[in-house]
Length: 74
Image (tube, rainbow, N blue to C red; front, side):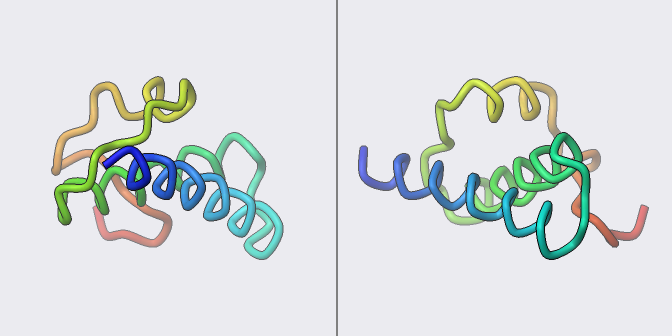
């Protein structure tokens, strides 16, 4: 299970970097949207959420109705 949390944390970092570089988002926006995507993945699959500080800060108040990825309908 610890490997899952480490893998999800690595995926979070990679997703943020991709959004920043490929999509041209500012770093704080890219990190936020990466947290949203990671949170949704963890909710959908039951994988343990990352314990990284930036993840915990951004995701602390998410609900299914709030967390949105770029381009998601409101």
